[in-house]
Image (cartoon, rainbow, N blue to C red):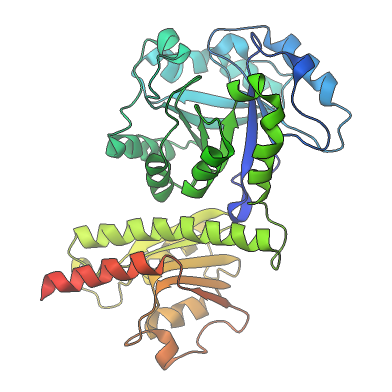
Length: 402
């Protein structure tokens, strides 16, 4: 079994998704704020304390079964008893923000065989509770404390660990009824250091708050309680979501989505540049993306390896070809914080990379000055993404050397 394309794959080109969270114990399906024309991308079903999930999902499916557009129903279980094969998929959750083994692995073991034999889609998900200013049912049931929102390093480290453990999604949750949603600083920091689907929920009550979460890097925003009391607001939230939708390469929404994706991946390249800086290397970072997944990353290592060719792009290309098992990368986009030099541009051309995105120009040593036609003939170039941030990092490094 594997995650199929229609269930929670990382949205393409920065396209954003909205999930409606329904608690079987509380939700009133008769007042469900969706229609065939206006509906969320996903419906999450679950709660911390229970409810008859099977009957609820059956009733929900009967309401939306005739819709032309399928709305995937994804389980968001509080424990193993809430699993039902009636759903389209399940977030296979591990509560990584707590230290209770019951919710790290024991509940997963109890439900594993039934999920495996059901053949429904499963999404290995790190569930990370961030203090939203209220005691949540998750805290009471699991006996764990949320992570401190001011300790962003710990939150980021937890999310990096989740990705290293093989999680396909990270769910940052402020909790039901949260006073404070997950901050944009946290979302941005997590997005800069991870590449899996990023889900954010809890305390988001306005379209402006949802837009802020999207802009910071959230792929999917989850809203529950607000729509139960204000079903009329759904259309406002959908309007914000659609502004990020991909409508084609020349449409305004398509360009907005592409810029959002470019900025997100450039921030990950910047995080690679900071790794170089911490090793007293010239701070340049690079990531290579194919089919919305990072397949290679690297940063400058010329001093560390005593190798003048160990530029960030060269490291990332080597990593990407090893990931894919071939020397050509025709469907890939390369993101680098500074305009590639002629050597790196040559390697990019030989690798047949189809799109190059860079931050700050390099008028002294950049490829455009010496070899403007070095890339593959069909390759496209986008310059100036997060240019000010990329330039500032380089300038600060050389100032410190004077």
